[in-house]
Length: 57
Image (tube, rainbow, N blue to C red; front, top):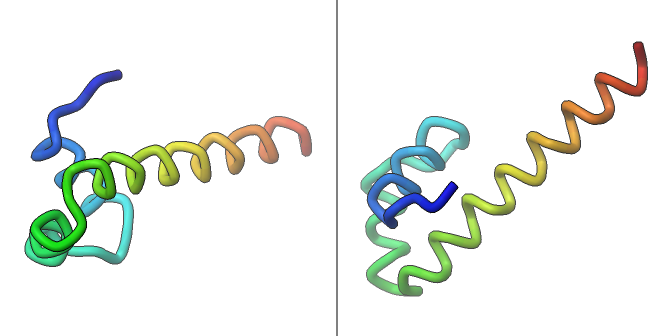
């Protein structure tokens, strides 16, 4: 899944404590790659939770 930076910001905001406004400020300070890496970390954490849930069953 290859999202634009704007789509990534929306996804991270929906799935974390960060707001869109905060993420846009982080983008200005740290750049697009920083935002992209946040989404990857979110996906990895979610995948880990799903894998753990499947292992329990």
